[in-house]
Image (cartoon, rainbow, N blue to C red; front, side):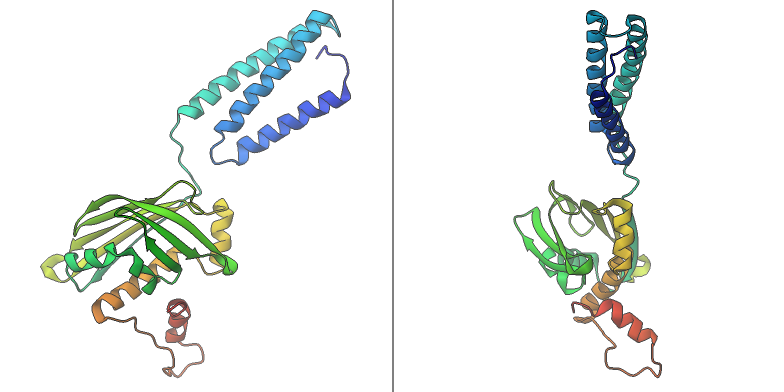
Amino acid sequence: MGVKKKTGLMRTLGLRELASGIGILTRKQPKGWLWARVVGDAIDLAILGTSIVTNDGKRGRATFATAAVAGVTALDVLCSQKVSKRRYVNISAVHVRKSLTVNKSPQELYKFWRNFEAFPSFMNHLKSVKILDERRSHWVAKAPAGSSVEWDAEIIYDKPNELIAWRSLPGADVENSGSVRFERSAGNRGTIVRVEVEYNPPAGVLGSVVAKLFGEAPEKQITVDLMRFKQLIETGEVARTEGQPAGRMRSTSRKYDDLVRAGA
């Protein structure tokens, strides 16, 4: 580089570069790490410039190294600007879409669904929901290994008897958003309920895998929750097969109960 040998300084710069690389390659949104790399480039240019001015090393090598770092700096600035402007798509987000037909009118289902505080009665993974105002609510949900997660949510779109859409507010333990649609089925044979949920696992893709190992996967949760919702709204209670003999040690009804009776 044409700079006088300073082992401690060189090691520090090397560690900085390794940290930047790890941050850029592992973060969902690496914008901050890219700009941190630009700052590091500026520090390198300052060190090289000082070496050229003070002739503290070999000036020719230092000049060549300065030109190379200046080129890298220009590329880092260009990348940082492009990433800063880009709308980021989170590849680790979990997307779930489910639907089922319920033998009730859209008006009845919308009215029931709009009362978020009733959700724990058919959603196994929820501990509580508290209405804060007309649009905001506070949610507490079960998490793997007996822990819990909390978030505040707001309704972002509300079309009576047709659609409710929501999203979590900043500071949520689990970022999430979703919607539920109520569509009258053909021949007035009830209502098709379509639920769509997206959430970001607390630990990214790894967190999603761990959640599944603990039986807290949202795909299974939503399927069972909708079945319980259908039972509750149509019959007034959630049907269970607990205590009913099926003639087999591990029956279908037993497996079903393992999923749906927890928290009932």
